[in-house]
Image (tube, rainbow, N blue to C red; front, side, top):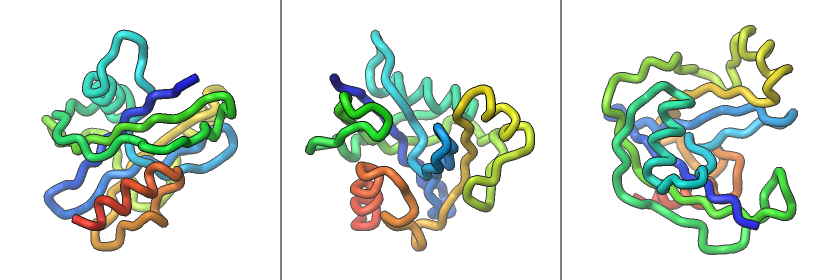
Length: 151
């Protein structure tokens, strides 16, 4: 079974890259914003929906950056193969979501919600000059981080 994921790479005018810090099922992940494609959805529509749901942010989806080209087993379901698609994105409006300075800087309210939802997230920017594969958790994200650093 396949699990199709779509992620956005947003680099702002200050040359900073957006990452999502997430606490999911008792583990911590830093990754690119995005998520799973739903039935009836195209990849670009999926990414627009994910940014709207997660950050209340309308985006424009730009150029394709990378699609997984090797076997990657799901970290959450060993019977699934992950296929991830990455696009560059640009916001169509100012970011309203409260940005964090530190990784996993969750509010007390988010920590209370976590007990019910099993996942919470927050967002922050990392200076592109300091960004590397080490800043992200997931194996496919590490490949994309390396591609970004090449350009």
